[in-house]
Length: 163
Image (cartoon, rainbow, N blue to C red; front, side, top):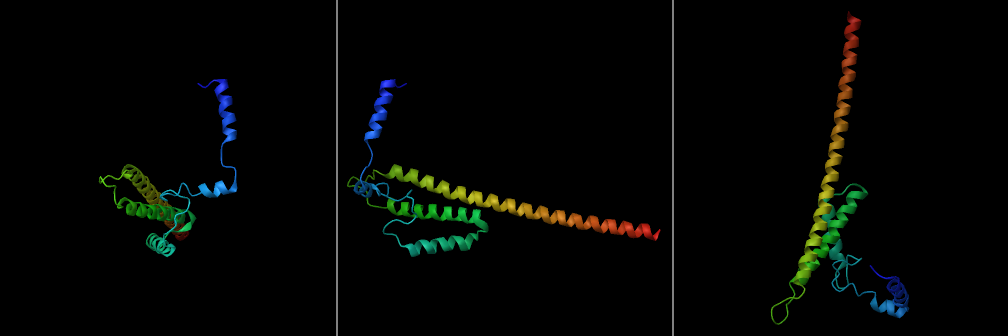
């Protein structure tokens, strides 16, 4: 457990640090975009936006999302799949002179994370569609039962009038 003195020193030091000027902020704003696997933007510098749009359109045409939630899940799959393609290209880069790529463990971790995101979105899309199908089937079954019940009542009514 930290002492009161240490906690106070940490608070004071915390107030001292950080980026203060606009120039410094501009200089470091892209530090996290070294590879772009988890950047805020799907498209990073040097990538063709037309290829991403074509890639996205293929997903949309194949999966045909209905509604905002399904569209969100498909967009999530597009984003993660695009990043996975970028990762696979980066994995094929030339290793150092000894034949060792120091980033290979990170690539494996990134690949696993991206694949998990894709499969999770796909699974959620399948679950959502299954629920919709089951709801529609239940509604159709209930409608059919209602119609059968109405026909029975009508038939019973006719039979009782004929007697």
